[in-house]
Image (cartoon, rainbow, N blue to C red; front, side):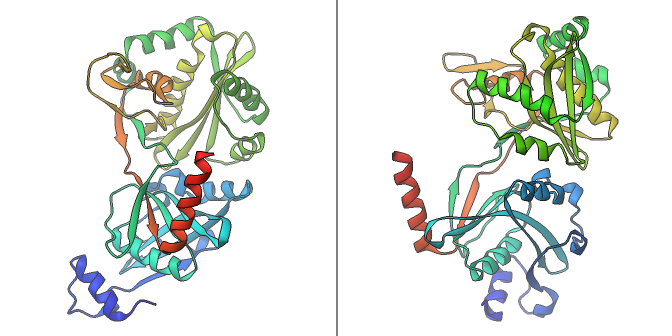
Length: 355
């Protein structure tokens, strides 16, 4: 357990006046089991990224994930934390917390409490860099995309089109000219059929059918489908969280690729975001980009350049044509609570990767 002296010293590190009463800065963590019990103060669920939304946590539970939720209070401010608990060999247990916006002092409270509950480490993907000198922290890879493209959809439709690359704009108009039409549906069967073709064609790992069935049951998820001659040829799944619309998943058929349906789907997704009073359209994942010149191993398009060996190279070219600004997320961090067990965990993981 933390001592009062330890709390005073911790608060001093963050600029609080240690001569004042500790009652002014109460710090505690409580596990949450019911949505109605959340009292967030200045923090609102709509301001969080969708992986921290309560309903997304319920979706995770429906597919078998062990979701844990906590309220962390520091002074008069309470923060909501949602993570996935994972258990491994030898009793090693950790909590994975994606896309969380917490000040360092709240993370310290979380770490202290989870250590007492027997966790080996906490893996956090922060929205902001934090400092935690009292714990050993190890940088690791993000599970969620570490770079994305954000498009402001408050502009008029004409302005949005004007800021796109000319080829992107041309492909949208070509799809319309070819007679591609877009409807809003809710069909896991339809998406799954297209998804199977996409996975086989592009050779990447993906979720099972139940994952998409459960996902489409969420009120926040919207499905758009592109049709050509009464045949569904492409579909996207969008997730609305607050005033942001996320392009979450996309799939397309092997036939009729020349009618450019995915371009029209993205355009209709942006218009849907505007209709639902969103401010931002998040393309959810691109390669790390920067300025430069096209050369061997580097591709450039619409003012951005990236490494062609990146697994998201192809989708990056597709997405950057629509415009928007690049956002980079900080690197994920393992907060080590039990150093010996953490060393065993990382050692075994390295051995398994070599096999």
